[in-house]
Amino acid sequence: MTQLPRPPYVQCEDVFKIHKTHELEVVALRGLDLAVAPGEVMAIVGASGSGKSTLLNILAGLDQPSAGRVRVGQRDLLTMNDQELVDYRRSEVGFVWQQTGRNLLPYLTARENVEVPQLVDGVDRRAAGARALELLAQVGLEEKAGHRPNQMSGGEQQRVAIAVALANQPPLLLADEPTGELDSATATEVFAALHALNQATGVTIIIVSHDRTITERVDRVVTMRDGRTSAEFVRRVTFGRERLAMEEFALVDRSGRLQIPREYVDRLHLGTRVRVEVQGDHVEVFPVTSDEERA
Ligand code: ADP
Ligand code: MG
Image 1 (cartoon, helix red, strand yellow):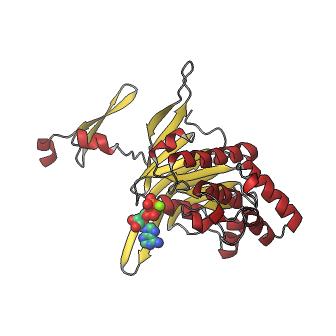
Image 2 (spheres, protein in one colour; image 1 turned 45 degrees about the vertical axis):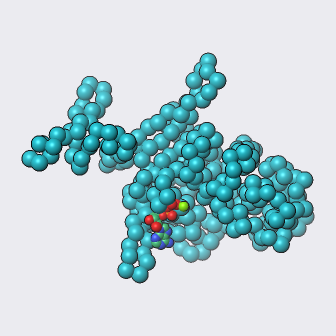
Image 3 (cartoon, helix red, strand yellow; image 1 turned 180 degrees about the horizontal axis):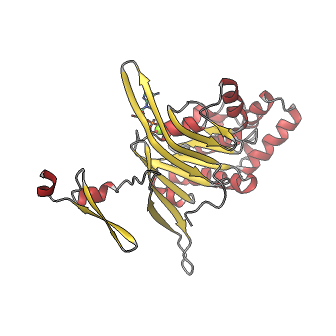
């Protein structure tokens, strides 16, 4: 169940990103591993400052990692030159921002907004218009094609933004808190649109969110903590039951490192050292007593 059925489409290994500002250096990613299968709809969650946007900007080709390996399809994002990055951003990825205002041109209609990236790419006007209508229908907004952003709700604007992001048929869609400014009911419509497009085109979708209900909206959720992926929730179908359950896994990196959930660290007063013992088919972790800690 945790095994990916096909080779990953997105693969990050031991990725580091250091943001440098004046005299300050912030390590936003510290040894991050992540694999995403082609056609998957998955989410990345984590507290503010855990590195989610940094990771998404790297996958979008908007920023480059300081070290590590990042592959998307056949491309190596660390060795691409500027022109290759421009091509990558234009053909491989669509991006949806949290701020509805940042995704759309305010003086253009929904249809025109979806046409723009196609026209820039050299698609002729008629074909661009037809594709725009088709995409707007897929996100359930055919009847709003002639509306400008200020004549639409926040959720409708985000669905248009998804159509814009997919206008040139990129195989990867990245969305940074796409429902962060929306209420829950409206967010549900946005997720329905994402799933419909995933079903129709097989586009791989990575959503960053700090909304806890995201676990009910996607098949897999990866948690980030301190610049690394730390846990994973995978949807498990329980036969004979109405509800789908999410199964939680802690992630072990290639060096064997594992993050113990903070709740357990606090509850068992785990310090900087623990005792690890193999018990038959599993490993047990014991707190070190304060006497041993002092020794
Ligand atoms: P998240 O999206 O999970 O809130 P970010 O990736 O935005 O996290 O940020 C991770 C860390 O990197 C934070 O400490 C943040 O302040 C820092 N950071 C992010 N972008 C920059 C930047 N351009 N310059 C300096 N520091 C940054
Ligand atoms: Mg962010």
